[in-house]
Image 1 (cartoon, rainbow, N blue to C red):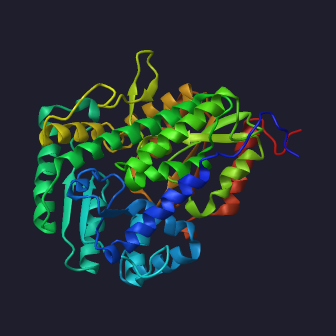
Image 2: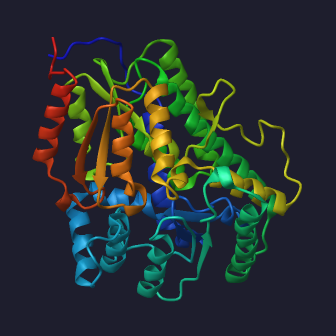
Length: 436
């Protein structure tokens, strides 16, 4: 029997998080029945921009949808096989292949036929983002497609020309949205959506920051079901309001020493997307008294951060907190572009050193004893440079366990081998299962 070191209890807002996610996918599927528009794009797309078309816009983000398919291993395998039969390579992004397979099979992961979007609104930072929806338009002809290139370099090198490059594309995108939908654009809705996006992404960073506490109030497996709301609809008032409710509950857990894992005695982080069909590996860690308190992925996929006066990482100060009111569409788009270009997970597309620096910051500030690195063959974008990250962490004295897998293709994950590697890694950390 595992020893209990800290009091623990379930999250009170857990059911609400589940309800928001279910409503999101149901509303998208039912949009046309209600005369509403729906669009598709990536989790990193500038989703605040289409909000200016009206309150009856429903969206689906591709990566979370691909992850939902991956969690259902039987459906995922059928999707992947359909894509391979159609001639697409197996080494492409596994989220993308799951998504394409859902279209080819004409099956929606949440029941019924796949709901066709009215338009595609995407951005391009990863090597597959624009191509993802180029193939979708080939599979589902006559879907208009707009993609914003955000490859303007790392944030610390941002200047006026680089910012204007992105902002000008967003201006063009709004004109394109008006043309393709026949609707007049409402800047006030855009302003509200941007404020909500800044609020939700800053508050999520605040929640992750609270995990510096010992014991940690949240574990990473739980965080997967919470961060995902921001990847679905980060500009939504519902999501921003929920994150504030969640933050208050997590703060209460910190104040009262409520742990996510009652036997916490070893703090780790993981890296990139997990193998979604095998999340039980995180529960296996708990048998050793080990907890993954997060990752750069869970912290920085949607969380927006800044360096505070004391030199530590913390949630970025929002425009509203600074007393900023948008003076024009251009002003609002400049704030939106700047905000997104500071996203931590965008920085290491330019150099693995940026990722190593951020992981080392997390290792120090979150008081880690080790790191788990997923050599994820399903995502080239977030896995690039991972071997260099491993060396950088080890050079600074942090034990690292690497394991191979695929976030969205369960055929490439060896469960028994991974569990054996965990056993060996825990032994090097001096940990045994079910310690007395």
